[in-house]
Image (cartoon, rainbow, N blue to C red; front, side, top):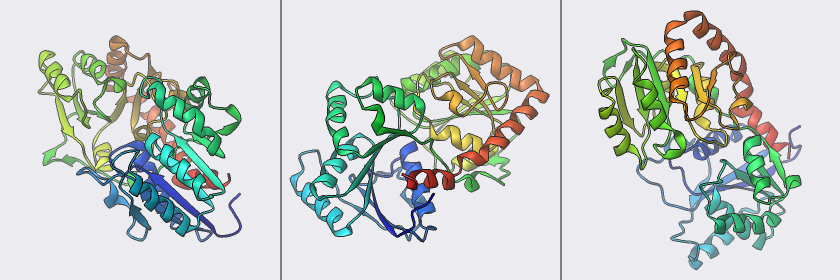
Length: 359
């Protein structure tokens, strides 16, 4: 049920760098513009980098940056508190650890009545003990903490976040951006081969090393690797060692993800752990054949054999076998495409906003 009166909502996030949380905020903001019962504004806490997604934000969205050099940037604390107070928001949404920390404290200092913080990932091996301690203390300032999957909720409870504070709301996406595309040429190259695609950061969490080793056993097809990260050089080196450089392309960070997904035939995400990756929802919205590893939130979107294939994480042989099966079995490909089409309506950004506003 939507709110009956105009609500003033303030959203705080680090910036619009390439990432799932940032894409969610952009889609949320563009959808909120359509709502007559909401007035909202976004405040970012870091200057935009060269790969910013800010250009995807509707020009009518109210947005300001209060840049923090670090946590102890006193001048920026005063500026942020003044911005929050002047906007006179009823609800403050915060995203990602830095913004969750600064946003919750600032919001409480100026008397915001409702503070809701988002947790986007399973941070067990990503956050330090100090960061978990800060989260434990600052949960007292949040009216609710939104976990983007049950796996994220489980992780939060494990780190002593009160279960009654947590609400699970799956991410949503602007599905219209990913449909009715028919891309057959990418970067000037006409498509000829069955194409697999990975999209995400090139870090240990994502298991791209497992993907490359598995792909070396797949006889046909090409693989696009979209993204960047600290493991890029080692992954390029690995592809050379596996002698698959003629079939693997590292495309770097891209902003044309809908077009790349349209061009590809099968999306693969071999992560070792995940919260609920936005790129998986993008693949669903694009009606792609999907192969993912069995990270904890995988089954919250994909039913194995019905709308995608789920393989055991870190299992090179099983991933290679599943990719080969997709190449060889046309009936299975058709079945999985139908299955993913049937669930694509459930991940709309409209549904996501409705669930968030219902709080």
